[in-house]
Length: 119
Image 1 (cartoon, rainbow, N blue to C red):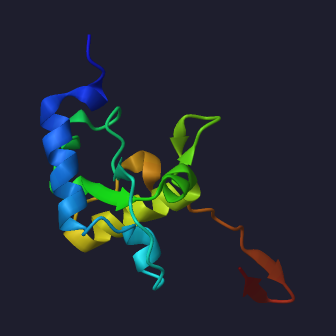
Image 2: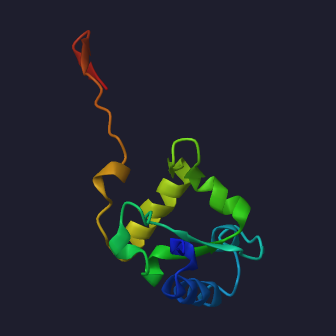
């Protein structure tokens, strides 16, 4: 039995993503660093969002090192860096950020001190 990553459709889409990105780590390229990509990362994790698994806009070419920085392997979730990439992608495409990846807003209590409100 083949794994998901041995699926012929995935192999074709993966190759297309690497070609599109000219086999370069696109995250490092943002900072002017040229490194050859080895893997293709799902910005929206394929386990949570299977409907986006083959979408080109959801794929980015990365080195193994950068790809490992996108994941918290202990918790099997996206790392803060991976979540930030997901948020940037949503803003760029005008997509809504999924609730589990929205920034947590904290509310501070207003205190009254000598007639003034402080946040």
